Image 1 (cartoon, rainbow, N blue to C red):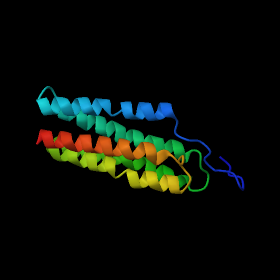
Image 2: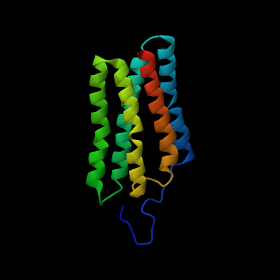
Image 3: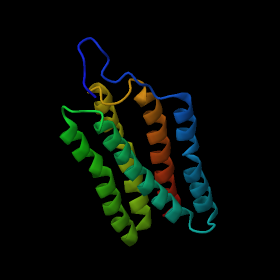
Length: 152
């Protein structure tokens, strides 16, 4: 996107459907935590896999936001690959000790928030981005950590 003087470089906003689907995206992790708490099936493994999936998805969103930038795009795409690399490393850790891996995954999800805030400050994300990202990251991070506590 080419920025013009006096014009908002990111005129879009997160819409209601995106908010609704974002919050619906917490439901699989709620189900996994319930399963882990009840000792039914592999709830903790499901929670780990879903956390890794969403962490990688966040990187994909950052990559997509970077595509709207010319200036600073290389920094954004470099940041965008970090969540997948971190998720892979945490999956390896979880293979050794599942509860610690779940807690680490939850913490990694929480640590995406400063990057999201930075994206908004740079004008690389919609102004209302944090209204979506804060509750979703806190919710998913806390649920993943809870799964780790239940798996321990």
